[in-house]
Length: 221
Image 1: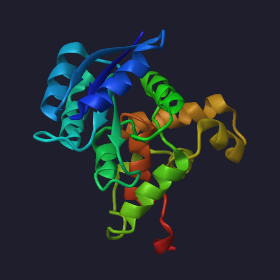
Image 2: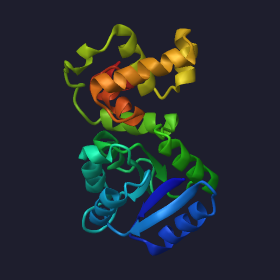
Image 3: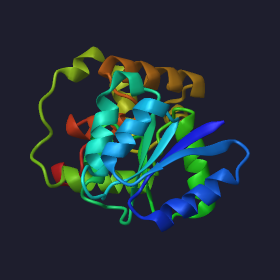
């Protein structure tokens, strides 16, 4: 059973999500909160599999709550999905950087929400390649040159190549096809890169790829 915590300051939104999720045989809503501080407290007490987190809430917002959950080693198995009204919300990139496993726009189709919960619950990042690339590239273009970092020195050349492809939004199967590898081998390389870089999931791997210049937005040539 996938255990879900809802964090949104709008009761009507929570009611809609709760009704949809509880109708599924493999998903149950274990709690509802209206601000980020409550979300962190309930996450620590109940350790849900997935937190659907509104990014804009009064008091402690979803970004700070995600940061706190992501920094808590005891909550490593709690996966945060950011909910936003706009797919280029200015805070979404930072949320991915501090530990969110992905994001959804609130007007997503019900079937897509259910799929998202299941994807994130099994430990995969919820990355819509087109939207995520656009999102991260948008913020990369506002920053200076990618920072020089020695963190990539721990990776093999093959792992760097694969992290770059993850940053471009490719799935394991697509990476395998591109590099003429088996999907299992591609998955192993991704997993090893995540462990070496100390990132929680593919979402953070995408951020690392942009921040270190493995993936270079068009403005950098």
